[in-house]
Length: 89
Image (cartoon, rainbow, N blue to C red; front, side, top):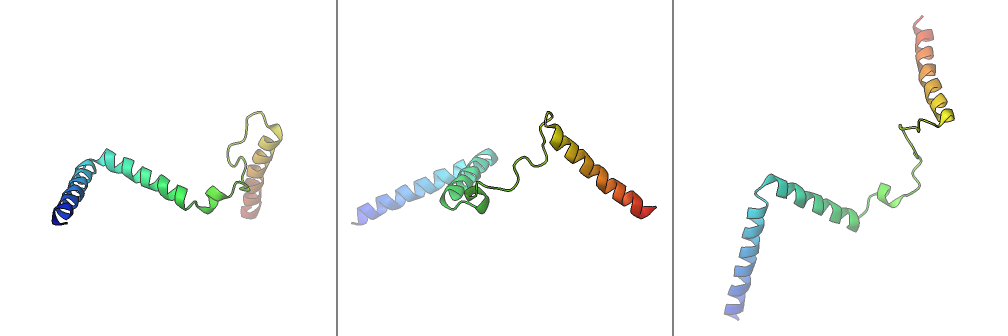
């Protein structure tokens, strides 16, 4: 029993030492952090990962050939500028 315990403790010590050596370099720490973050996201997904029906479909990046959307964006920008100019004058 004592020999098995000693063997297990040596194995744990070796795994811990090799992990410490591997994590001593910054790129490896970044890789490990990304892996842990992905595991966390798979185990406990956030609200946005669970919800596929987000209200924003193409927020902030309209398609260049979508004329109606581009007109709406340009009118919206001009509306706020005109409103500001009217208030200030």
